[in-house]
Length: 155
View 1 (cartoon, rainbow, N blue to C red):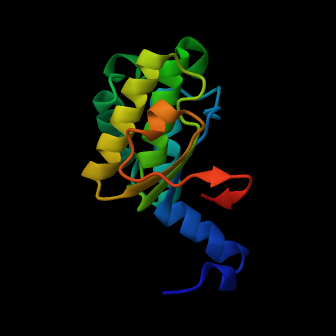
View 2: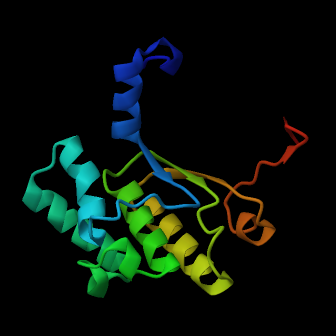
């Protein structure tokens, strides 16, 4: 066990690569890559073979209801579909912790419920945890534990 503050820049990069997954409100997909390629990339960086990465990406995207959209680019996907690709990408390397900043903030209520349910299901299946930042009380009510901030302090 090493204190993160003691790590150099490369060490912190390795921690992020090996243990963390990120989901943002604005999904930051690579526009020239299709859904599968957006999920494959972190797997290849992590050392997976092309075949392993493609299979993992396909499995994740299919489990998120995107099996029919594997070769579509972000511009060809709805907002909810793009967010599900971002969720798949965040979970690709089976991170111990997923950090999600308003992961459903740009989605309609129905799509938000689907994306959140799938994110939590996959995190739990992989034995990980999720830390989700949100202003959405309805979303927060679905969490196992809620920690609130009030005026910059834990409440």
